[in-house]
Length: 308
Image 1 (cartoon, rainbow, N blue to C red):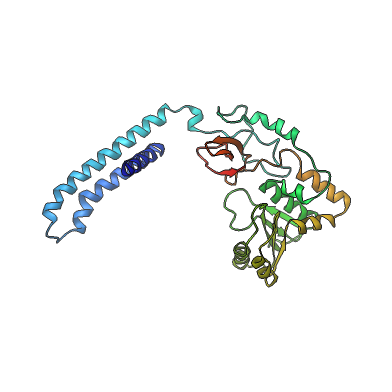
Image 2: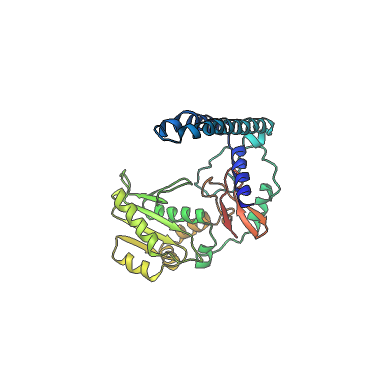
């Protein structure tokens, strides 16, 4: 039973992939079994016995992959335009100020059994807007909004801040430049971790990125706390480590107008629903047998999820 499930899974993957994948695999397997295998086995005393089996296997695999290619091609032809090209819905209104939308606005969105995007406006209206900076308010920010707030803070303090688009960031969330300079003066790593403490592993990774990029100053910001090992390691490194309380203290040092402007920036729109790390759009609530979770609107193309 286990082997059959494994084969079924492989067949499903081939059907879900473009038909060219099966076609290419068919050609490769046919050439390999028909000609390359005899060359590798040249001089082997059992070659006359194995050759008829190899020739038969070459035709069997070619027919199998050919069938999968035809089935996948027919399936793609029957797919609706929405299934063939998924259009990302409009999120410009709910996006954080200053962020760059990754897609153009569209008039319609694909049908989904999950929560409609149109309900995002109602979500925004019910979100409380803190009147002052507190640790609780800071921890209510989703990860991308927290990253943007960190960048905005350093802009207020005199740096030019450059945030990276969603996707693999290479251990850098924000680059800080002194005015008039092209080389970053510092790199920033942001972790909106409320439940888990930042360990020494994450601090070492930032130090490794600094060494690779030849940048002398690093800043690590988290909404949570650091482990004792991380704190000890950080004391002997050129990395400024700010936990949630430390960042709140930094915000308290700003002028009143600057502090209020950053507060308005942080809590505008939907600041709690997480952003998909891969696609850069707000995720949506979904249900499963294990309970509710946040999933990407681009599913099944993107399968990123967040626990509630």
